[in-house]
Length: 178
Image 1 (cartoon, rainbow, N blue to C red):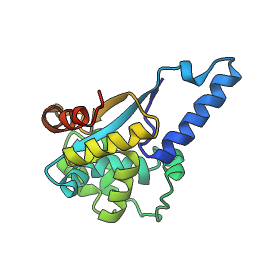
Image 2 (cartoon, rainbow, N blue to C red):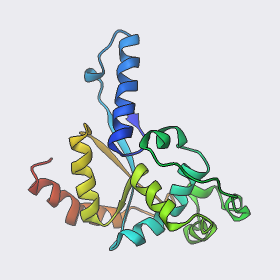
Image 3 (cartoon, rainbow, N blue to C red):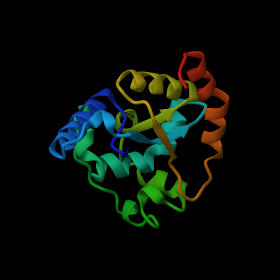
Image 4 (cartoon, one colour):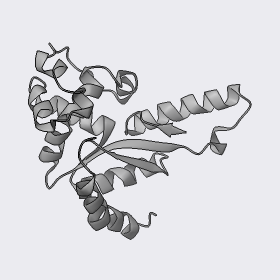
């Protein structure tokens, strides 16, 4: 089972309970399912820059409603926003923008504090060290397999590959994780 639902202990617990109920209804056990948590990922030298880069995805998920069901499970209550018309002009859409800088600019109507809340609820967004800490915390909440999904679909994942190779994986290995 590949899940793209968010990345907080509350979301993990709620989704795990949902999987358990579904497995029982079909005469199966949730423990027998291979569960992989897909996580939108952005790394940068500062968490503020990673969050800035994640703006299009965070707004698409949290403000436009793509992932509101699971986001509500995580606890944040978001204010209502008047969606900027610039959002609808992004090609092909906000979270798959060909011009990522234009997509970032189109999301300026959402305050940085809201973006921070969304990033923490929905993905691994921050410095490589912060991402390693989050993975360890989520492992303690029951996650044991990840599918790392960089934000941009028109740019290769070189930044995340380097961050995970050089920092995240060594930190996880030093902490006893594989």
